[in-house]
Amino acid sequence: MRILLFHKGGIGDVVFVLPLIRDLRQAYPRAEITALTHDNGREVLRFCSHLDDVLSVSSSPDTWSVREARRVVAGKQFDVAITTARSVRAAGLLSLLGAKARVGFATFPERLLFTHLARVRPFEVVFARRYQRLAEALDLPIGDPIPRLIIPKEQLESARSRLVARGWDTRSALMGLHIGGGWPTKRWPVENIAELIRAIARRNQVQVVLQGGGDDSTTAKEILRHVPAEAVIDSVGNSISHALSEAALCRVVLGVDTGLTHAAAACGVPTVCLFGPNDERSVPRFFHRHVVTRDLYCRPCNRAGRYHCPEGHHRCMREIHARDVLELIASLLDDAAKLGKFQAR
Image (cartoon, rainbow, N blue to C red; front, side):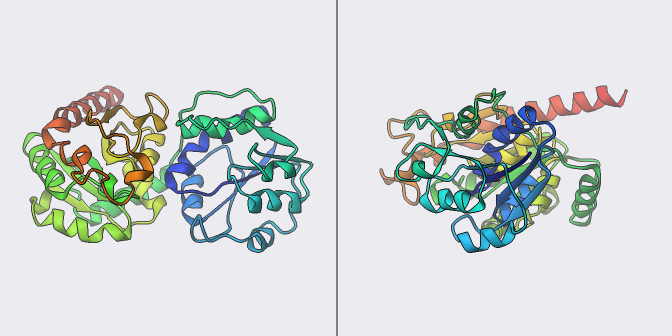
């Protein structure tokens, strides 16, 4: 059996489709499962052990075309084709590929092109659970909604070498810190980040690995102006696969509600995730070791607050202070150190 999964969306969306992929593999252990996604999605899914192949149809989630998708999968025949995208274009692609079983969400008009329909629950916020409904449409059992990524040993060794070249002394523990965020309102203020780095560096033998996309380089430079140079390793602008390999070497990762933070958790790294405008229930329960929010009348504002705070104050992120996460981070660093000593025995 050959199965195709077409999935677009940001890095976080790619992470949250992992439970669906695992459900497919458990139901069809001998099937050949191919994911069709975009360049960043391929960088994440290369670490998914349940996939046989990962193909990219575009450089970003929004620029794909049916013509290019057909070219990428030319010569391949699929028995089952699944799409997480709710669009006529995605449904049309599945039809053109000729799969006998075509699975998608029961939204109109694309539902007319599917053979198996997944129920739509408008108020369901957990993305991973939402995608698993596609497995239910095939009458497959679904499992734990916790995603998992596995970084191969050679990738970890390469990451170790890169970090040493950038200033890791190898004696200090590593703490990942994701400074970006897909939405401007998700980002933690620079002054809060700098305060935490200074505090954690005084208390622990730690070097902080700054991570983010190329667009976050200005923020990284601003942070570096306010912290001891030896306390920070600037890794902003790395490829997604390099960022994940480096995060996997960290004892703890702190980040906001963004794909890199969720992917680090999927790698099994203890994470602290700061939620501002978005609903923290959108990630599976117990996915992140700790979730930090502010109990405000205005949150979550979700997409209404994507670019600007609707109330004009942005308290949801400004009022998460360094002291609010310092003890959590220190505790996770200590736990990881004790676990490392135990395993070394």
